[in-house]
Amino acid sequence: MSSQSLPQPGSELDKEKNAQTWSQPAATPTDPASAPKQAVQFDGGYQAYASLVGGFFVAAVTFGYVNAFGVYQDFYTRDSATASASAISWIGSTQLFFLLAMGLPSGILLDRGYFRPTLAVGSVLFVFSLFMVSIADRSKYYQLYLSQGLGMGIGAGLLYVPAVAVQGHHWRARRALAMGVVVCGSSIGGLIFPIMLNKLFNGSTGFEWGVRASAFLILGLLLASNFLMTAHPAARLADARKPDMKVIMTDVPYLLANFSTLLIDWGLFFPYFYLQLFAILHGVDANIAFYTLAIMNAAAIPGRVVPNYLADRFGPFNTIVPVTLACAVLLFALFGIKEIAGTIVFAILFGFFSGAYLSLCAPCVASLARDPTEIGARFGPAYLISSFGALTGTPITGALLGDTFPWWKPILFCGVVSVVSLIVLVISRNMIAARKGTQWV
Image (cartoon, rainbow, N blue to C red; front, top):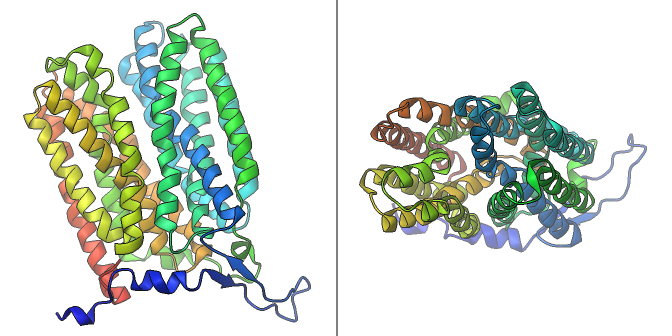
C-alpha cells in the first residue's frame, strides 16, 4: 500500500486544533428556552482545567485508596479476630469490582445531565463508609464487608468513572492526554495512602484515628472536586442526540475491546497483590520487598502520561496494542526473576506498562463515541464488563497458589490470558481501522 494512501500521523489532529470550538445546535422555534447559537471552547479554558484538577483528586482518593488495600489486608490478617486472609481479600476485590461496575449507571447519569448530583452522592457515600470502617467491630466480618467492600466500592464507582468520562466533554485534540493526567492521580494516591496508613496504624495514632485521618483528607479533596468539575454545557442540551444503547451494545469492535480488557484484568493485578510475597519467598530482603508496590506505583506515573500523549498523535488503539504486548512479555518474565535486581527492574517496567494500559482504556472507549453525549454511555458497559475480571482475577491466582505456592501456575495463567487479550485487541483494532478508513486509530 502506498504511503500516500494513508494520512500522516497528526493530520487529523491538526484539523481538530484548527477548530477547537463546537457550536451548539441552533434553537428551534418550539424550544421555549431557545437561545442564539454560541461557541463552546474545547482544549482550554477554566472549566477544562478545573475539571482536570478535580478529576485528578477523585482518581487519587478512589483508585488510589483501593491501591492501599494491602495495608488493610496486612492489618486485618494479623488481627486474628477478623477473618481468614482469603475472606479479607474479598473485601478489596469487591471494592474494586464496584469501583468499575458502577460505571454503567453513573455513565448513564452523566449523559442525562446528572453529573453533579452523582458526584455529590458518591462523595457522601464514600466518605461516610470510610468513617464507618473506623468504628466497625473488626471481629464481625460483615461490618467491614458492608462498609469497606460495598459502601466504599459503590461510592467510588459513582465518582471515578464520571470523573474520567467528563474529560471527554472538555477535551478533543488532547483528550487522551487529559484522561491520562486524571488517571495518574490513582498512582499518586497509591504512593501516598499506603505510607500514610502504615505510619498511622503502627504508630501512636492507631487504627481507628488513622482511618479517620485519611477520611478527613479525602473529604477535603472531594469537596474541592465537587466545586471544580463540571460537565460540558453542550452535553446537557435537551435536543442533543440521545445515546442509542442498542447500537452501542451491538458494536462488535467495542465489545471485543471490552472482552480483551476483561481477559487482561485476570492477570494485570497479580503483581500488585503478590509481587512483595513473591520477592520475599525468592530470597529478596524483606525491607526491599516492602517497597516493590511503591516502586510500581511510582513507575506508573510517567506510564499514565507519556503513552497518552502518543495516543493523541498516533491513536489510542495503536498505542495500547504494543503496551499490552509488553505487559504479557513481562508477566512471562517472572519465570526468570530470582534476585533483587531483577525484582526491581520488573517492578519499574511493569509499573510503567500496566499504568499505561489502565490509562489508555478510557481514551480507547471515548474514541468510539460518535459525539460527547455518548461517551458516558460507552464507559458504563465497558467498565462493567472489565470489572468481572478485576473481581475474579486475584481470587483465581490465589487459588492457583494454594498453600504450597507453586508460582509457575499463576504466572502461566496470567501470561496466557494476556496473550489471548492481545489477540482479541488486535482484531478489534483492525475492525475499527477498516470502519474509519484510516490506520491512525
